[in-house]
Image 1 (cartoon, rainbow, N blue to C red):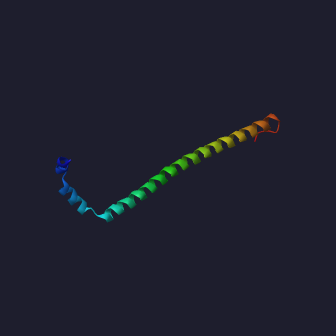
Image 2 (image 1 turned 180 degrees about the vertical axis):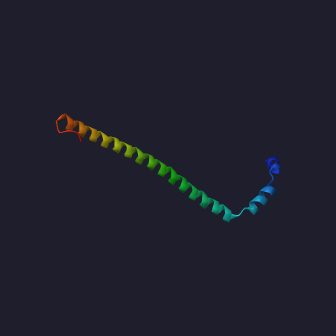
Image 3 (image 1 turned 135 degrees about the vertical axis):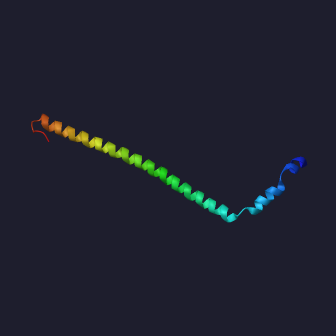
Length: 82
């Protein structure tokens, strides 16, 4: 175990640890959290947009089917077109 510890560059590790700035680490954590919120919002907005698009298309299809059925029903029973 002592041989392994002799190969570890403790001086370089200590120098890097001393140079670390806690403010920068905190700022990075805040930015990462805000990025995650924005990313999740974009994914959710895309999903909502897709759902609304599908619902709109389904509603348009259903409305068109009702209108065609109405027109055909009126034409078949002698009440003219429209």
